[in-house]
Length: 83
Image (cartoon, rainbow, N blue to C red; front, side):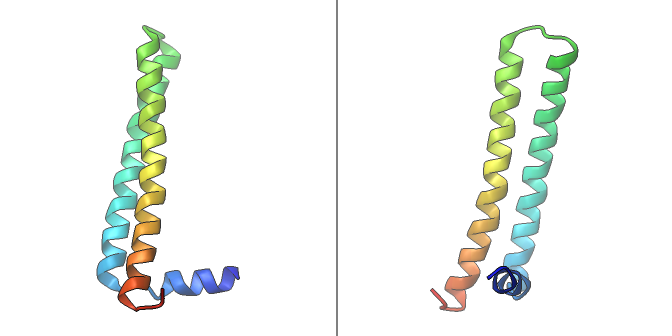
């Protein structure tokens, strides 16, 4: 089953793969910004708001990561009419 998933990922069309890579890099940068905010809060806890902003940004970054991956995978399957 894992081999089938890896095979499907390796056969994704180039334009969809390009959009997926850009989205994954964008979400990774989003998570890095969130980690920077959380580290600022850990070193200098000014207010609870910085913690909330950092955690919300990190959650959204992870959600975007999964979203870009799954949407790219599904768009490729729809394009090839396998669903």
